[in-house]
Amino acid sequence: MKMHFCIPVSQQRLDPLGGRYVLYSVYLDGYLFCRVRYSQLRRWNEQLRRVFGNCLPPFPPKYYLAMTTSMADERRDQLEQYLQNVTVDPNMLRSDIFIDFLKFVQLDTFSITTKTASLDIFLPDGRNIPVEILTSDTAERVLEVVSHRIGLSQELLGYFSLFLIRFCKEGKQSVMKKLVDFELPYVSLRSAEAENCRVGLRKWYMDPSLDSVLMDCPAALQLIYMQAVQDIEKEWAKLTQAQRQKLQAFQKEDNQTKFLELSREVRHYGYWRLDPCTCDYPQPGCGAVLSVGKDEISCCITLPDNQTQEVIFQMNRVKRWQVTFLGTLLDTDGPQRTLNQNLELRFQFSEENHWPWFVIYTKQAFLLSSCLKKMISEKMVKLAAENPEMIEVPEQGNRKKHRVQQSQKDVSRFLPRKSKIEMANVDCVFGTIEEEDL
Image (cartoon, rainbow, N blue to C red; front, side, top):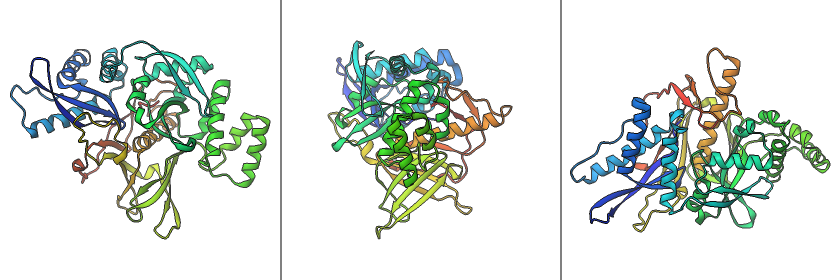
């Protein structure tokens, strides 16, 4: 699936010789990723094309005369589409040409040189592990360093990931986004420094039954146990009184295996709980709390009369979804570093032979989209296990990217500006889903 790249703003700059050029501010999952010139992207495209040939998406043409405003907007849109489409090919994502360029522009944007640095990685129980890294180390590399430090088996790395976590007042934490493999965590913290963010390690799968795969590795067992305890303390899961008493007894005995086995019977265990947000159902402005996991989206909606209503959407009812940035960036001295203030995620679902849209306004729209993609990935893995002759996918713990053939009409996309929303009158069928999160 495509990644959430967008270019909501560009700026004209003067070069040392007095000429003008356009600097594009590229955002990934709502955070400033880099600022880059058209000429840099064009040279990068030429390098990629020499290796991958016609597999690349079309690149916007070079203009030899001054661009009009409409031409400039069209180029910006085309560059957005290029960045979104170029990340679909898993082979390209892992190539040195791809990674080295993105590492360079991230470091250059924030004026960071490659050097040794200490990075604190926060664990689910609130403790942090300082690790020595290079400022140019990718999230994939940092995860390998952390796993070596805590004794986590390399074969299990695909079940965990690094996340950008915002620490709020009174100790509250909000997971804002998953760091993709080619992001530089040290640089990402600079992009999010105004939001008091830190890098955290969490498990990364939506099906709680996958806990069982990790139970034989002491480090993995400890990590998922710590996260289970924290999530239950935050009341992300819905326990009965009997379950609560048994879990407290297992926790007192430090019986991690029994604790996790019973936790998997608890409703909403292993789900991602989003911060309170608003939605348009049954009418605009209703408060909502979303829990996502195990092939469903559970919405607890506060109605105008303060009554609550729970609405559950099974993923097999969801046809497509899209994230949209609703605002504008007008800061002429440099655009803001996050888009999280003005985001919506809307998904189209099946209801009695028609396809209405459910709209959610949340700062965690990109995290929610990543969760939906992950649920589809895990669904395809299950289908492959049941029908190995029909579908070819990697093992869950294998971090290598693969292509998955499928026929389900699930589409995700990012619309960077509200004015660009266009509702399709026909079904959009994607022949492949790229499982970039496995």
